[in-house]
Every structure is written in structure tokens, then in C-alpha cells.
Amino acid sequence: RGCTSGGGGVPTLLGGGGGGPARCEEGAPRQALAEVSVGCYNVLCSTYAVKWGEREGVGPDGLTNWALRWPVMQGYIGRAQWDLLCLQEVEHTDVGDISAGLGEEYQTFYFKHPSRPPDGVMIAVRSDTWENPKVLELQHKGVAFGLVDVTHRRSGRKVRLVTAHCRGHNKEQLEALANFADASGQGEPDVTVITGDFNEDFRSGDGQVRCPFPEGRAGHFKTLLREDGLPEVSRPPHKQAPGQTSGKGLIDWIWVRGHTSRCEVELFRDPASRLAMLSSHSVCSATGQWASDHGCEALSIRLFDTPKRGPRFLGKL
Image 1 (cartoon, rainbow, N blue to C red):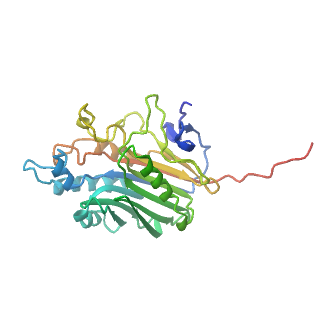
Image 2 (image 1 turned 90 degrees about the vertical axis):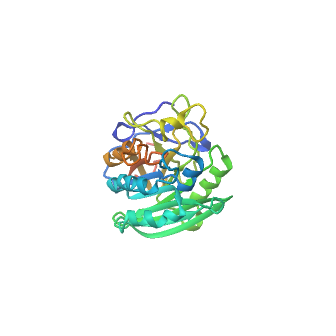
């Protein structure tokens, strides 16, 4: 099926059950319970940058340029003021730096990969927006999955945020991530958000998107395609060259699911997120390169009550 426009005229794609073709829908204008912004950013671990000679992460001396790059990325994040933030490739020695840079406005939670000694993933939530954080971690075959459940202070809605750094084209790992996101021991949230560097472009040549997470009792996941004027891929131009084998295309994704019986969601791109995406996909003056070998991914979510359905009339007129 083709894709109609979601909120703000931007294609909103809904993943079908079993990873089938994307489906499309348009939400009726209603009063939202809340609007929540989400950012996702692979910040390029310094150890890997130096080891692999990543031009974005090393200086002329061949050593890490993290001290120049992080203030630039911190600026992007600070201006965007996302309610929920997920970071990948966070060097364990930089956790304190990042938490301090985000400031008291955020609570941060770090999940370190056991078999990749230098780095892990991080979740940060705005302290003035969320309360009652509950944290869960899964170490899956050497890779850390991080999960934080939070309650929206104003609306009372429960949101689950999950992040991972995936290997790409690994069905078993994606299934494990989907099962982790449905962690029954934590209860069922009103909204589930899965973000990450998936190292995989889920788009096909005809513009359809294959959702990597199956539809279940709680509903289906959807994402927001990049609209005109935004970069089409997650990584710098040189990473799209024929000889490159690492994560070509659009590989950083945000997937959102509103619980079928409790909460409907509508995705849109707020101006601050759009600016952060444009800035992070551009050369910065501090290094003459992108601040990371990824640009950020970002969107906002409107939360609505699920409409009450009246009783069906089963008799004769």
C-alpha cells in the first residue's frame, strides 16, 4: 500500500505484523493528553574512532578529539531539549562527562556492553517531565539492551523507553529486543518507544518500510520517515561509498507503539528536532567534520485517549 500523510503532512508508517508491508493511517484532530519529544544519537565511541581511524573522531595527531566533539553534540541536545534521549557508543570513561553536560535537567542511566569493553548505551529523561523511573537491563550475547519506564507527570501516562546498538541484519537479536521491550515483569506501559542504531536500513526500493517488530496484543509500532529537506541517510556522505560496509543508508530509527486499548499516538516533527537533525548531519567548525559519524534521529509524539466504543446493537430494527 502507498503511504498517506501523518501529522503535519509527513509520512507516518505503521509496521505490520510479522514484518510485513507498512500500513498508513491518519489521526483525527483531537485534544492531546501530552506531547513528548524523543532524540536518538550515536555519539561515536573514542576508542573505536581511534582504532578504525574514523575521521569524525580523531584529530590531526591521530588521537581522540572527544573534547572538541562533545561540546558540539551537547549544544545540539541542549537546544532540542528532548523529553527522552537515547545515546549509543557511549565510552564508559565519558559517562560522567555526558551526565554533567546534560545537567540536572536530566536523569541518566548507563548500560554497558560486557563484551565490548569501551562502550554502552545511555537513556536520559527530563526530570521536570517524568517521575518514578524503573530501570531494566538485558545482556544479550555480549550486547546491552537498556529500558527505563517513566510516568509522565502531567498526564499520568506510562512510557517505556528502550535503546540498543544492534549488529544489523540479525533477526534473532531483533526478536530478543522485541521480547525485552515487552518485558511482562514491568507491567504494560501506555506507550513503548524503541530507539537505536540498528545498522540496518528497513526501507525498500519502493519506499515501503519493514517494521522489525511484530504486531502483538498491545498493538503495532510505527515510525516517521524523514520529510523533504532532511538528509535521507543517517551517516556522512563518505560512509555511503561503494567500498563501505558499515551501516549504509538510514540506520538510526525511532519506533513508537501506543497500547491498543489505552493510548493512541500521532508522530510529528517539531521544529527543534528538525533543527537538531539538520545541524548534526552537517560539518561543525570545531573539527571540520560531523560531530559524530552519525547524525541524530528525532521526532515528537502526541498522546491521545483511545476512543471509547459504544455497545454494538445486535437486534433487529
